[in-house]
Amino acid sequence: MVFIQVAETRSFVAAGRLLGVSASAVGKRVARLEERLGVRLFHRSTRSITLTSEGTLFLERSRRILAEIEAAELELSQSSEVPRGRLRVSLPLVSSLVLPVLADFMLQYPEIELDLDFSDRMVDVIEEGFDAVVRTGALSDSRLSARLLGSFQLLLAGSPDYFAKRGVPVKPTDLANHICLHYRFPNTGKLQIWPLRREAEEREVNVPISMICNNIETRLCFALRGLGIACLPDFSIRAALADGALCTVLDEHVEQVIDLSVIWTTSRTLPPRLRVFIDFLAERFLVPARLT
Image 1 (cartoon, rainbow, N blue to C red):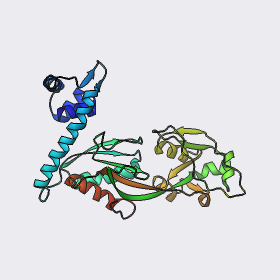
Image 2 (cartoon, helix red, strand yellow):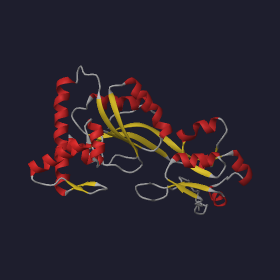
Image 3 (cartoon, rainbow, N blue to C red):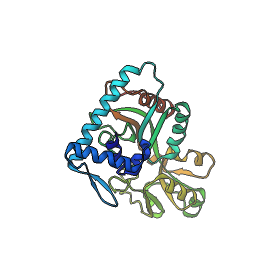
Image 4 (cartoon, one colour):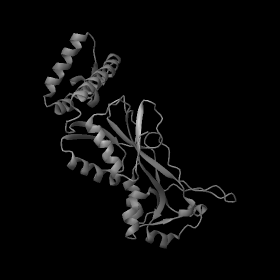
C-alpha cells in the first residue's frame, strides 16, 4: 500500500499524508522494500520521484493484488456493510454540472472518502488506478464497463449587448464577421469544431478565432461580458438563458448531441462504494441510464 501511494502521488510527503504517517517513515518503508526485492523501484531526485522499469512492473502487480484483496473482503461483507472507503474518481472540467451532485453524494454517504481529479485529458482508468471516470464520448476499451448518465447539446450563445452592437448572424457564413470564442482539447491540442450544419448551396463556414481557452468558465464569462459568441454545452448556460443574460443564435444550423457516461473497470462484483456512486450519478443526471 505504501509503495502504491508513493507511485500514484510521486511524493513521499503526499503519500504519508494519505496514509497518516511521516514522509520519513514512508521513505524507510520503500527503502526496506527495495532492499528485500533487490531492485530500485524509484528514481529519486531533489525535485521528483519517478518509477523505474522494475517499479512500473511491480506497481501493476501490486494493484492486482490489492484488487483481489478488496474483492475477497467484499465477498465476506458486502451484504451488510455500509458503503465506505476511498473512491478515486476522474471528472471533466464541468463544475456547474457535477459539483452539486457530488456535494449531495457526500451528504448521503459520509463514510465514503471522495478523491476527485478534475481534468479534460484522457485518463487510463486501469493504469492510473481510478475507481470511476466520468467522460463524454463512446467506450472503446473492452476491459471497461459504462453507464450512460445523459446527453447534452452544444449551442452558440452571446449576450444581447454583443448582438446589439455586432448584429445577429442568420446563417453560418455570417460568423465570419463576428468575434468567436474557442475551446482547445487538452489531450490533442486541437480546436473544437463548431457543429454547424451547412446547406448544399452554402460555402464552407470560416469561423474566426478571436480567443482560445481550455475550459467552459472562461468562454461563459467572456460571452456574458459581451466579448463574443461561444459554443457551449446547454447545461452551462441554462441560468443565463433563463434570465436573458445570454441568447442563442443559429439554433436550426447547430446539431450535436454528446453522451456523458460513468466508466469503471469490468469486474464480477463492484465494491458497495462504487455501486452506490454509479447509481447516484445515474439518478441525478439528465436521462434514465442503463448498464452497458
